[in-house]
Length: 157
Image 1 (cartoon, one colour):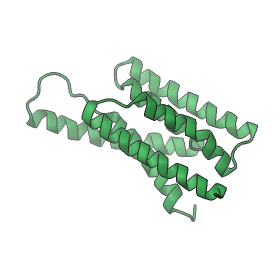
Image 2: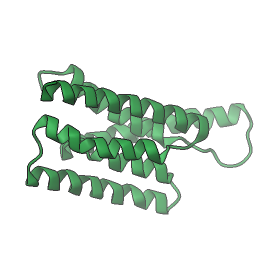
Image 3: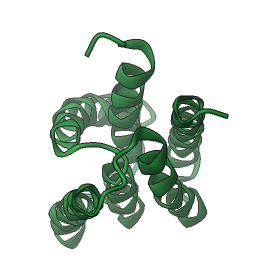
Image 4: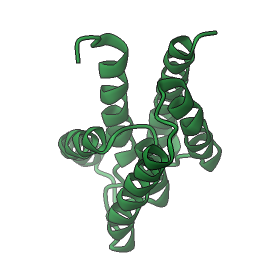
């Protein structure tokens, strides 16, 4: 298996992981630690397959992931996000460059707004009591899938 084939296989596995996260977050409002840990542990294989396995590259990947995790941990602290959402974004940040992570944050913000509106409407239609529990993991997974799809389908960038 060539490194390019391995990279594509790993991206496909990440996409499946993200789709499972969407399902579990909508169904149970839960993103499993096993799933997030698997995504995080597969990232170094992706670095190896894509040639970004130098000391500087690894340091940048880890720094960006820690920064993203810390940024979203603030949202968790203020009760705006669940812990699984924060961990999922941190794991995803390991996979991509800092510019792609910034794009993921932007896309996740837009998608999160849309997901919030949809679940507010569902909450009102069903006349449910209590606060709306928004599965932000859906927006985070969508943003990750957006970046993965660019890698898989846009060979000109």
